[in-house]
Image 1: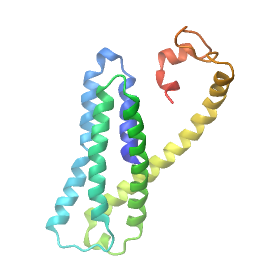
Image 2: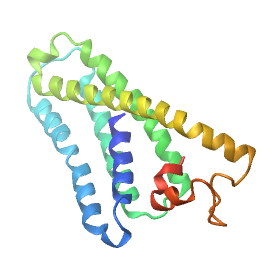
Image 3: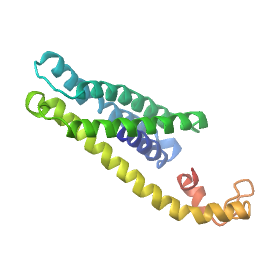
Image 4: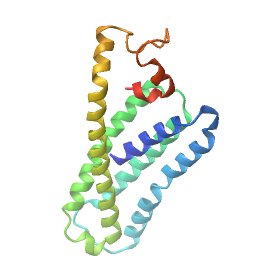
Length: 190
């Protein structure tokens, strides 16, 4: 799930800055996202030249992780550059998030199930272990904050459903939440 996490953080991080000062932030975010591919490519290169044996499919999962990393870089680039982001891209991104959740959990479970990979392929083992731990932590982070966000926002959504435009009416620029949302649009983006 860390692929989804990095791209999602990049989306919100670039929106924190004023529109006319986002150039350097966009470049920094994209370079940061590109840095995630380097250790994975290094480990795959070491595994191709090495003679270690691993009974689990960690190398195959790492190659799938490289594909997901390239997709993460693409989403990060698109989210940093595009304003506004089309809803089709957002939907595709959430499907990508579900796929990265599955890949992260499979990676973590496969890494924990290995017996001899730590001894024969330490680079592969430690990369998979660190990415698996990062996947679990980002999943817990998302679940924790998703539940908290829903608990906080649910009453506002219900009031806005029962009495339309009482909480937020963008057209008439009024409502209980108009001023906070005007300053920080990420509060209402779901």
